[in-house]
Amino acid sequence: MVENKEQNALIIEAIEDRNGDDTQIIDLDGISIIADTFIITSANNERKVNAIAEHIDEKLSENGIEPIGIEGKNNGRWILMDYGDTVVHIFHEEDRAFYNLERLWKESNNIKTL
Image (tube, rainbow, N blue to C red; front, side, top):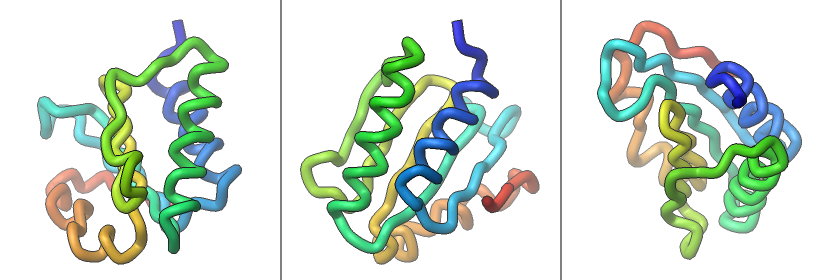
């Protein structure tokens, strides 16, 4: 069984492999019942957004980790990948600026930018 920390490292590695932009890790432990961690990244076009999501899915599947659910793959503007304790948000950069999830979770006081 892969620990959450190891899972998150695999996610970050997959994002970096596909050159995700402005990747941030938000620690929500004790703040939200949704997840313990949000990982947010972006790309400048739909094809790249999809490529990042596919690579994350492949890399985690190779390590025996399957998502609970994946939403948004059809439009490539905002893909949400639910891995239980960790939720990954992959945005088209325009949509990321519009939704600004980081602002919603600013109370976390534990946002790490990669």
